[in-house]
Structure formats: structure tokens, C-alpha cells
Image (cartoon, rainbow, N blue to C red; front, top):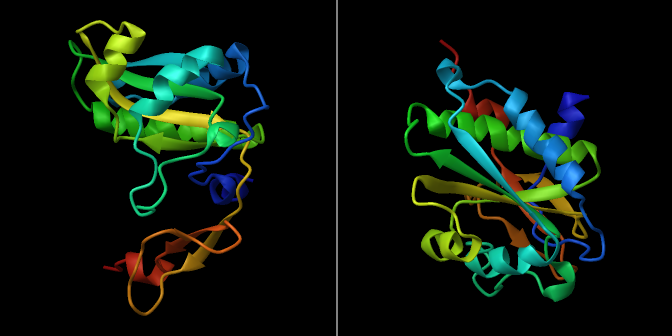
Length: 189
């Protein structure tokens, strides 16, 4: 079952803008992160939930797909309908990157189980977004997870002989993601 969830958990960038994610669903996803492991149990992460009209404040502050240089992100009918903003309390610094990775994966696996999809963003106009959302100085934005009902198909394939790992879209709009072979990433001692 976990194997299936992991395979279905892709970075989706196009969504059904008519499908609304409720505040309760967002809280349930954050709760999965809250219940996940935290280094030294410090629990330094904070979570901002965004849905409805507030999504319009988040969208323009994200860079959408580095390898798709001719694409500026989804059109208005394919935008995410919710976001979870991962933040850290500046007074609690230890191991925050480990906790953030665990939290993001927990949230995205939970979203996948609900039939949703998402994409983690690190390329964020943080200062602008903090002003837009009135986030205090003591809180630092780490990542943003865009969420919605995916409308794109993502295809996993093996990295070719050229070693190119860049994702791409074909003429039909399918999103192709090359993955290295298992034997190429394991070292046996």
C-alpha cells in the first residue's frame, strides 16, 4: 500500500480549479505532519493553511517549473485550490530541514490518499509573501505545498543513456519524469 502511495505521489503542477479543498482537509493534512517524527522532538515547524480567495496572494509568489522554461505556470483554470506553508519558529533552529522533509512527505502522502496531488516549492518570493499574508518577522517561510485535484498525467520512466534527469512534457501534455535505476543509486558494502 505505501509503495502505491509513493508511486502516485508525484509533483503535480496543474489542477482542477473547480475542486475545492476544505479547511478541515488541510487541518487533517497538517495533523499528519504534526504526528510525524521530529528531531529531538523540538517540533520547530509551523503551518499556514490557505484556501479560497487567499490562494490569489500565494500563486504569484511561486516559481513553477525550472526545467520547463517556456511555461510560466498553470493558467487560471488549472491553479491549485489550496496551499500549506511550512514555516519555522526562528527561536527553534535545530534539524529543521530534516523535520521539513518528513512533514512534506507526510502531507503529500496524505493528499495522495485523498485523491489529491501537490507540489513542493522552495523557489518563493518570501519577503513579498510575508507582507501579503502578514507573517511576523520571527517566522521564516521554508516551503510551500500547492494542493489540488490533479488534471495532468505524470509518467515515470528510466533515465536514458545520456543521464538526463530533466522532466519534460510531450505534445499531449503528459509530464515525464526520468528516474535513475535502483542499481545506480545503491552502493553495496
